[in-house]
Length: 132
Image 1 (spheres, rainbow, N blue to C red):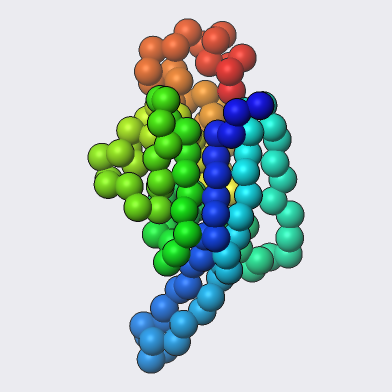
Image 2 (cartoon, rainbow, N blue to C red):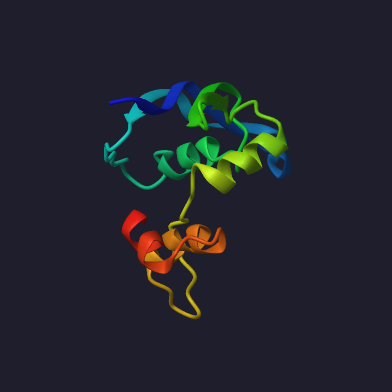
């Protein structure tokens, strides 16, 4: 199977400016590869960095070091260093993100959230549901 995501030595530290610049390391040199068709589970206690890792891969957070490469339209894009326009292109066409905090009101099933970008691009509802 072809790799779709390669994370190498990804690190993230938060700086607590309101606490005199205290540094809080959250991720330390995380590496993983996800291939097409694979299902990966991030498992660990609260505060272990699972959500931070996903936010770095999606480029909601900027990592301090390492790479988060996504296979996008025939080439690799490093989400850790990509320009905003490239990040938006990857989000629009290749990778989605569903927060652990789903929309509460109105209640929307996770499947509908995953389907939403496909439907917005004009994909038929049945096809979007199958792909999601």
